[in-house]
Length: 339
Image 1 (cartoon, rainbow, N blue to C red):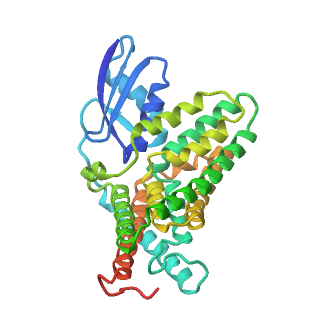
Image 2 (image 1 turned 90 degrees about the horizontal axis):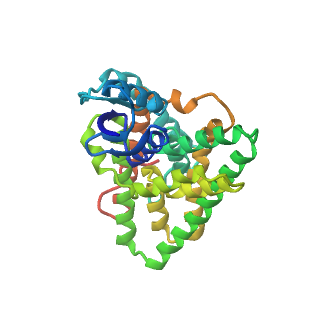
Image 3 (image 1 turned 30 degrees about the vertical axis):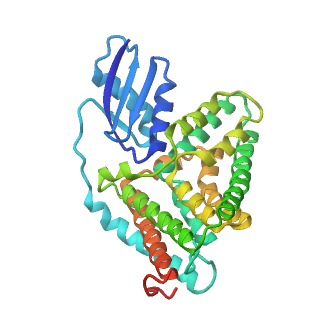
């Protein structure tokens, strides 16, 4: 048995760590694996015969490539493809303009002067569903689909998974809201939490741009061992396993999810917290449903630099917008937007 250290490209958050460790750890030749977001490395121990490190890196990349990760023996220089912004900027601008128009005509309530709003939660969920932060959920769905497909059980597990996910986000979102009321947050506390939500969104957006690699260390999230525990659930062969996995996704280390959880805490209301998290979960549903019930590979196709930069710019807009509106609601600055 030998231990190798490889450099890995494509990781953005702790969800990426969990997904990388789960995929590599399932290989029969691997005895242990430990990924690090701080220095973008993965340490793998196992029996690989006479393979040289370069061949091992290639074989592990073949397992991770569909998730957007590549391994190499030597450290690769981080290169930003600025030409992608020529496409990403117009796409993001059109996206934002559409939201503003919908807000102006009253079709959806995306953002108010003091609230995130259910529309915003839905849109953030839509973006999150095809981002690296939700890659671990997509990996769980694909793995679960493959396992049950072997037993010709293709529909029931997927339905149970999505029911478990939607119900848990409603109930646990409400519980978080009630916890907020128990803390009796005053105006200052609510303002601080709203600023935290905005900052989390800003960090998420900047990480999606992949311009400043060092910022990935600032990504707040739950401990990665929680995601590892959730990943282990897929190995349990039980009728209700898909339902349990759907419930457990509420606790995965996804920055998008946690930004909505923080906001739900600030509401101090079961109903508002439940509806906010439900709107977010519904936003993730279309893409996750496509992953479950089809072989379109939509999650892989969207993992392009242009898409991530477009999504990052939109998320940054939401972060700045909510930060400014939060400051305005607290009387720190004058309102800058009339929509």
